[in-house]
Image 1 (tube, rainbow, N blue to C red):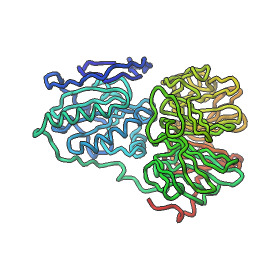
Image 2 (cartoon, rainbow, N blue to C red; image 1 turned 60 degrees about the vertical axis):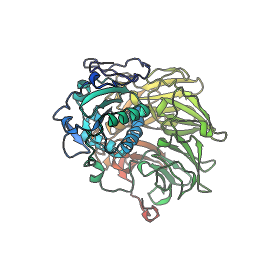
Image 3 (cartoon, rainbow, N blue to C red; image 1 turned 180 degrees about the horizontal axis):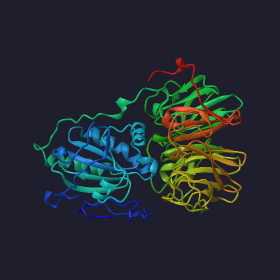
Image 4 (cartoon, rainbow, N blue to C red; image 1 turned 90 degrees about the vertical axis):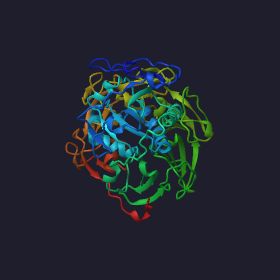
Length: 534
């Protein structure tokens, strides 16, 4: 890590930029020192680069114009689970210091797809970010401040001098203390006029769905279940889109109860158990696994209590089984398997005893095959099964991987490393994906939501050959044949009734693939009078 600005580092993290390449550095654990408490020890913060695209504001910002405010720079990239975990802390700080603090997001993209301003705008809307964000696609801001990992937070005092830098997540307490101290230190010299921003949310038209996450189906009953993630609810529809039920009040929270009163917080994964007529939901931002009894129409919590699990990830029972951003779930025999993105692991949950524990992955982030207790994963975000083994989208290494249940081993079908990504069909190791987050299985193929390539691809599990199945590779919203159809960051997939259903997340839509006609259409929702107003 670089310290050329004279900042104190609160902790180390994972990634370093060296020349044109972006290799992985070792995780470094450091104590939490004080952050430049004396003004004479602080150095002037570098000016903000000119010519950047800005979002959530109607004009570019300068450091000079922010004199009199405590400024907190958040260097992030929207694929990164640690960056996502930092957002709630930023919101709490903004609420505690509404007149003293200005948070600025500096989006320094890891993936090519993340460099596009429109895609950053969608991420701002998805995570409900309400502070200005600079598109630092060429890493001008990043280099100027000597940053070397995501996320990194830089604190600047009201005189425009650098106070300190912290990498990684979990710094709320020390930042709250230092911002309070700076407010007292500059009492009478601060600009306490509230800042008003031209937020992206005010430019967005309302829609029935908001960033739908995952989808599954009830083959016998002819039903679809999908998460309306940013509306904090689950839809049940017929296969042709007639709304049957909506599960959840739409309010953010962790509350059990009937369909009208239960609360979720950005749910993602859904998994249907036909033997029990039960739906399981990964309640992602509540770090919980929920159960929906479709007969009694009640929601209960299987695992979790709203707090994010940390390191070492140990597991537990019921409310003590702390997950971390669970993104998807599947059922194999009598066990649930959860893509626990926040600790880079697959977890196993026994739904009857409510015991949850790590199943594959050490908790370290990378790509390493081997025994499931020794393998390294990187933000698994989608999971499926063929009834024998598990398949999962390991998003940060742009990989599709499997767990051989008979041998207890993790294997890679496609994927090479944290910074090996692209859009290349063919055989491993040359083939490339770009941050896939969804998988489905059918007839010896793993179908992949190649999310940042805006495609559906498939991998032959016998040969490991990868091919584009649907999509042009350009973000868009277009029905048509497989070569014409366009998606915008597709996410979940499910085969139901001889068709493939896809959550087209940034298009706020469900897409339908007719496998025989090789055509893509958009599911038209009907019966909307059953959808409660938000």
